Length: 640
Image 1: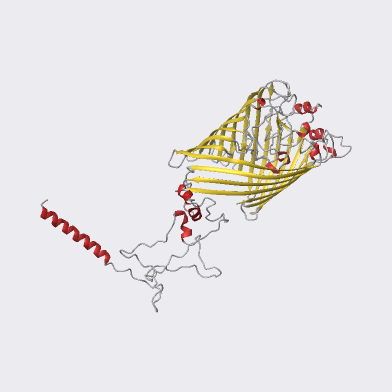
Image 2: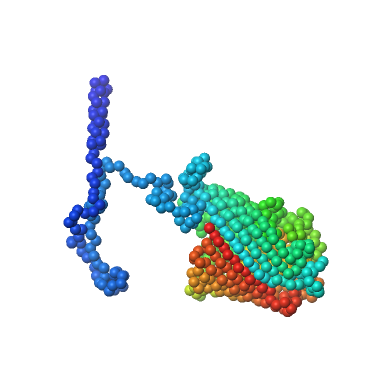
């Protein structure tokens, strides 16, 4: 291009730019509009707008409250031009300053105190940490590191418990608390107070509206104080000189894990994740086999738009504190490992029902560690049975569990019923059995089912449970079923006397018929610190229960369970007597749950349970002299 032409083009372009900026600079200011119509001007009415048609039969008729006037039929007025000014060309955009999209309400002037968990709260994971004013002012370097979407969630729980009970309590062999106490079992009244504070803290990264978090770090410390009073020496400690009262406290660690989101496998956020650390794990719907917080590594995910869930993991038991049952992170972990894989399929075999298949392998090598005594001086491993030699075992579990509605069950005759069921077989080997004095092949089974039906505000429950028992403790087969770490929600759960209480049997109370918060008649030292035992009498349970929501705040619960051993040969061997009768008796319980705010923030529970002995229990404990065993508890839960 010649030089003159280039100069001419530059001049024209400059003139156009000058005109454009000049025109913009001369745009008049947007006109102002009064906030009310001019004086004497009445609101306009759309006279040409037809009235809505007369209502027909079956239509919803709108009337003014409290009057019998005609149905509301009116013409909507047009928009008033002085109230809705249109946008003006070139006017600057006006918007209130918003720190981020989570704090729109705060930008509009809404302020919520930190103790309010029902509105936006940085302590409840509602707002990202990096833009928190307090954090930016006091810890700016932390706020900078937390960009852009780290959240924090805090849950605080106070669990207060008062329990009064009567259990068969052995008389101390060295010296009794009162003269002429020559019976095997003495006075069994006990009083327990427990206060537990739980603080669950979680740091979460990612937008979790529709997908799982990218990272999650969760820590749950627990602090407990407990006090117990009994009527007999040596019931609380091995040394009878330490009396009939005991106060204890413990600081435990219930969870401490890191969760990493590995990938999404579909546009509906089906995913794969891995979790490492102390974490909760429940093997089935009701917690019959494994319901614990061990150390572990878990690979899990979902498929098919959340119709399929799976878990694959390795877990190692944490040692528990004796008197609180909380994890004890200050001691070494146990040589008790579990490999677990389960698979959930929703809407199988019919819509509304979820099926689960499970395989687990429990490897226990604590027989090589020598004797283990708990904090009160009683032996836990090996159990005080037979020759008391240490033992190792390897046992595999295969199971099926199902839970859901039977509305779509073929035939339609169960359309208003629900079903929860569990089936397990245990196969394995233990290198030494204390009673048989030799190794045993483990062959045992378990089945449980609960049918329920809702009648408006009331639910009826029918329960049945079968635990296989051992017929001959001296053969090469152990046929009594036992779990890895049970904590079942079944047949009344912790309101039931049999499930909630640990009923002592032999060894100065060191061996119990059933574990605390367990349903199986397993003859273990304890569920928390003892080993599984597959030479046991087994159990049959038949029960009926009712849950009645009489008010939104008030629920009444009642349960009646009939209990019976499968085989009592092993009980006769342990007591060196003729095998007792198989009948345990009737477990009757009732509970009240009150939620004054119709939420879980304040929950008051009260329950009472009694075990009315059958012929077999009378032969074991001579219950005719003392009356039924009972338990009364009051529990207050406060949650933030």
